[in-house]
Length: 168
Image (cartoon, rainbow, N blue to C red):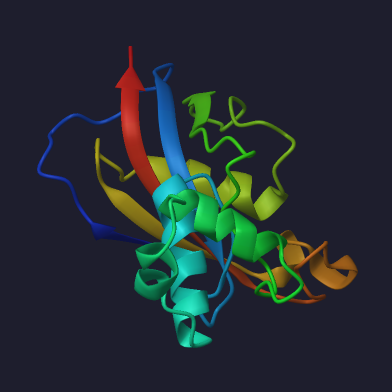
């Protein structure tokens, strides 16, 4: 597993063991295509960029309409011509991950795959408030030979983490 702190914060506040921390994440394939995120602005940006690259102009769509940007994305994502894996939905909540930062990582939910939990635990050792980290998870500790919904078998994954809050 590899990790990089690529956007260190100017903050000197670091999480201590037993602090409750909140992080946003973005899950990506090695080609940077997003497959999941807890960050609503990244979900919107991902979808709008995919539609723009497919030749759909949001400016033109919104010009003669009373729809909001979000409503336009929702209608496109629900159409028969939707992009392969839309990320934004107004029906979805985009909360950060919240957990008790413990030295052994036991505060991180076991609902996450092993590589996600291990990578997050390692990243937390070097993160400061408002910093960002990138980890690469080998397929063996991601979804392995079984794959998952939109994740092909034997696929290594990238996760970006952003530390957004620390509570003592």
